Amino acid sequence: MKRSLQLNPDNRPANWAQIKHWRDTLEIAPIHTGFGVFDCDERSDARMAGSLEQFDNLPTLQDGKLTWRRADNTYIALTKAELAQVYADVKANRAARGAVLHVKAEQFRQMDPAPTPAQLSDLAFWLED
Image 1 (tube, helix red, strand yellow):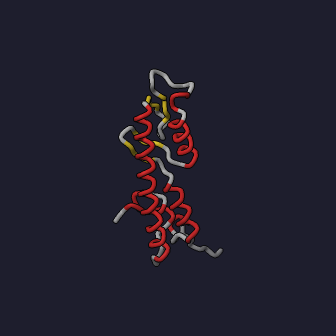
Image 2 (cartoon, helix red, strand yellow):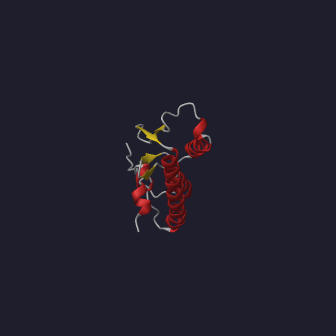
Image 3 (cartoon, helix red, strand yellow):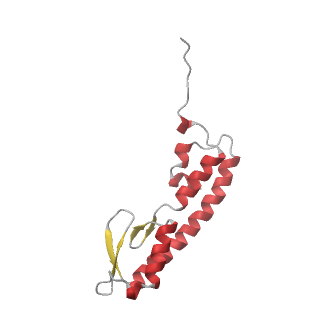
């Protein structure tokens, strides 16, 4: 019987589709703020923007605060100003992270060999200098 050695797919150099997948996945990974870690995907962004726009009319408002769920599924009561600060932090950090990830993706694509999918799945790997 003939045996062959096969590499684990996570240990093979990534192709361009895998690099783009991890770039896009990590771009919307939760963001750390002064109020905790918050989701920043498109749905979360729209929910936060809508809540800010309609803050005073929301039926769940209690004593001028809105209870918001963080990325780790814990809850925090936020005033309109605090929610606005969280939203501003999330948007700024997501934009900065996105800019870095797009540059790094092109650098990874040009590397020979390219990083492995296992490496690409780690946000810290992308943010290294």
